[in-house]
Image (cartoon, rainbow, N blue to C red; front, side, top):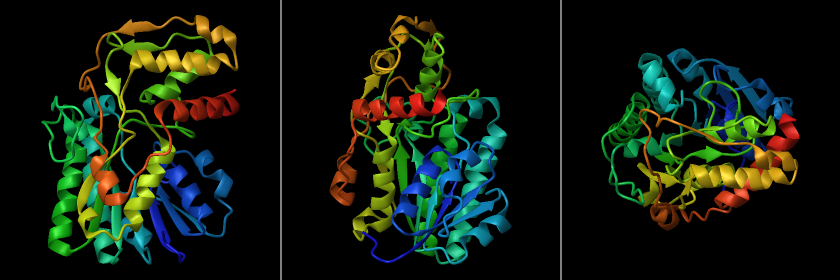
Length: 326
């Protein structure tokens, strides 16, 4: 691992994944710059380390090239997390999703290239697998995108590959699979399923499952994602550069499994939650039925070894939400 202090720019650093990355790398003694416009990120996510002398906040938008140029000055590594997530949001407003996820991404690549950043590690997405029905998902075999969001994340991969070949900048994409954990926002129209369901159950309100609950996901705890970012940033393996990696645990659980486990773990704090009914609704447009990652490539080329299973991560998350949402 890195033995000397490095300067790391984390875009979207006030968001769920970004703020966890900021906290982790600050704990390792590195200098961390957080770039965020707070459109989906929150200042309370970075409050605990905002006074750290190794932390710098740049409030700005990746859609502005000058902001990206200023933020990347003197930076060794970029961990690009800034994006507008959510399939439904991209279906509702494909233009702004494209502006942030494609134009903003390109701005960050250009700025990183011109600043001679050592490596550009970016958040890719499992949505890139689209209509491919093969399981588990293997990096080299994708289908056609099923949403505007998926298109934007695939375009990111194409741009990263071209910049690597054309300009020589080192890039690594991490295809995140349903990341969950502490600091994930339970509120808003596009809240992720786990914090949203926890928030509802804690209020004795029925969570609504899209479909019959048999759709499955490779739910991935935040600490595994932090590990992958660190490995991607530090690797000296030339085979690991300028490619993409599934970032997951390598196991799938249905939404019915998820609710069952959430009730089980919340029962320890409030037994009445066990009696909350689940409501089933129509399937959601653009949803992939099943998602399961092969993590063989990451194991082989990055020595990835995820520390938290779905259930272990879920227990940690439920405890965090109970302590922080009550």
